[in-house]
Each structure stands twice: as C-alpha cells, then as structure tokens.
Length: 232
Ligand SMILES: [Zn+2]
Ligand SMILES: [Zn+2]
Image (cartoon, rainbow, N blue to C red; front, side, top):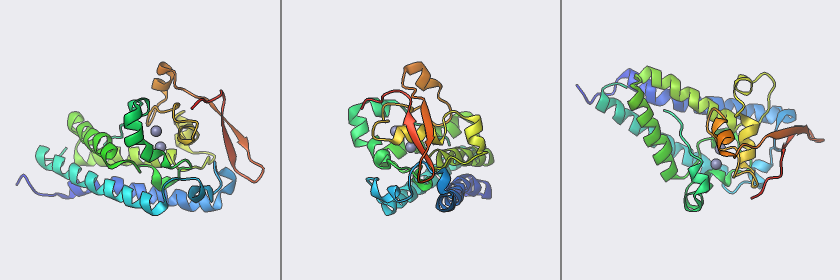
C-alpha cells in the first residue's frame, strides 16, 4: 500500500517538531535563571521586537504543520525517504528582504522558539521545498531524516537562544553560533553574518563576515559588539 503512514514516517515528521519545542523549552527555562549568560535583558524580548510572542508561536506552528504534511507526502511518494536552507540573496534583494525575510528580523532580540519564525512564503520555499528536496536528493530514510532534521532544528534553536552558556558544544564546533547569529539580528547587522546555518565560509568568501566581541554587562550577561563599524 503506497499511501499508508507508517511509524517511521511519523517519527521522521514529528521528531524534529518535538525536538524544536523541547530544546527551545529547555533554553526558555534556562533564560529565566541564567541572567549572567544572556545577550539581551529578558524584558527586551517584548520591548524591542516587532512581533509578539503569540504571533511568533502561531507562525511557527503553521510552518511546522505544513512541513509535517510536505514531509509525509514525500515519504508516501518515494515510499520512505530536512534541511535548513537560507540564502544571502534574501538580504541582498531589497524586494525579497522587505516582503519576505524581514519577517524573521522582526525579532531583534531573538529567543529559542522564534528560530523558525518566518514569512509563510519564505518558509515554503526554503524550509519546506528546500528541506524536502534535500531528503529526496540524498535519499535519506525517514529515520535518518528524523535525526538530520532534529539536529538542524537544535542548531537553529541554539543560534536563537540568546544565551552564551559555558561548555555549549555547538559553540565549540561552529564559529557560526549564537553570538554570530545574534549580530545578524541586530538592526545594524542585517548585512553581515548570514551564512546559515552551520559554517561561516560563505560570509568570508563574499565579504559579509563580521567578527564580534563579547563584553560583560554591568547588570549581568553579555553585550555583543561588532568589531568593525557596521553600516546599515
Ligand atoms: Zn535568525
Ligand atoms: Zn536574516
């Protein structure tokens, strides 16, 4: 039977969603207790952002629902086979930035579960179609794609968690990490650091790499500063 949802398919499409909320929830709890490791004061999440938390949660759930449908459709069509894709093109092209990617940038102060908040069309083109294509082309099984997509979701949540915690393995293995991506979310930072989601190689090749410095804030936590002058 070609059109049957199997246990593997459910794991493949649901595990990344569960990992997103569990990992994001963990960071949200840590965010309340680890004031000394925050990049922004907690209240800035509501004061400085251009989208409310309800709007963000609704947007993320809608995206995950569509992703769930698309992944299962692919599994059905291929009888059992995510990736994150984003492009600097969305920042360089003023039309695409204004109408699509700027939605993700409503979060100037990012937080864990805002990681995949984006315009529905951007979410469709890059995450759903891009992610589904990645599974299709690589020929991943549902179980392999479950782990791969979950890992991508964890990295994405980590990049948006707003905490510089000691011993974070993502910070050890990737130069493209929480602080690196936080600079990209600042009002001055949209022209820099948009290699996503793992490496910073393309920023270095294309001249959009912006090193940063972290200094201790008096009230606790860190303050992120670009090393060079950032022009908007
Ligand atoms: Zn982001
Ligand atoms: Zn961006």
